[in-house]
Length: 318
Ligand code: UT7
Image (cartoon, rainbow, N blue to C red; front, side, top):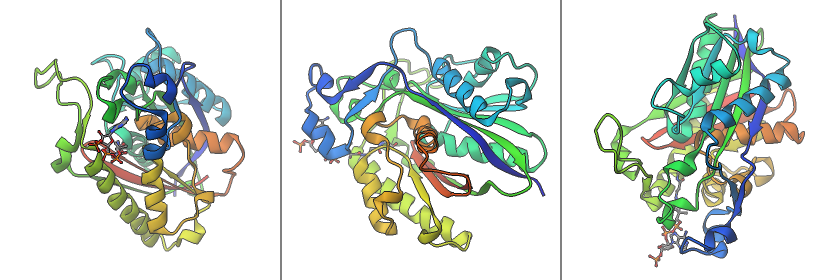
């Protein structure tokens, strides 16, 4: 039996830090409102000329280094992103070129904030079926470029960044179980309405019904935890670390209350990163690995939800 395991993690945040107080200068908001309603204190934002692939490349190089894997050993590249550098080619192939890798498959996955969990799931299946042995999985976003900076209901919530893992073939399961879901019925709750396919070039900014997204996220993500635990004969006591999507501290707290998990076992980065979409889970994973909280052998439950809606979980023995 072939399994996949995480060999190394990496993350990268753009250097420019924008605090809530900085936002007060050009958005009708306050630091107090943002902290109280979301737990966000600051976010990292790209500067002009800095692209999604720039962030992806740095996170990928750090993950390769941590894994002790050379770029030449990578035989599949998957980038989860909603903010690709170009319409085409994919950011995965741009990253492939930057890393001087030639010939292996490379593609993007679009599941918005659930993108990394989707990409990790796909990568795991490639490894389990013997189709790949060393996979670079990246979640990277320049979400700030999708924001309407005059809509205070959305623009204060997001940040930019990238997180990556290198997955490798193994005899014992690292990725124990993954579970993916989607329901396109909820499109209008969270979307960028314009696009190249519908010819609407004007409406190219995020719109969101925040309250409804909040309720839906708490409902499906707490249900998914219960489902994942039951399907794997586990209880919450078995989980060393929970890494939820980092959109809003109140969403995370509401989920942990429902699943009865103490916050001490939850990795929270939302105060410093805000919502980095597909990068949120791998960035949080990388942070907790690098600061020593997550150690080899720990059982980690990750989950995320994004526009669509798309949502999913990954249960991982690190
Ligand atoms: O990856 C998934 C992506 N998205 C999410 O997960 C977001 C889910 N939703 C949320 O996080 C929350 O619903 C928000 C943070 C977006 C909003 O928090 P809320 O507690 O649901 O506030 P609200 O939308 O009910 O708005 C309350 C008030 C409104 O004023 P009135 O109508 O009561 O006078 C808003 O206009 O807060 C106002 N408001 C703001 N005030 C200051 C909304 N945004 C802001 C703001 N600064 N940035």
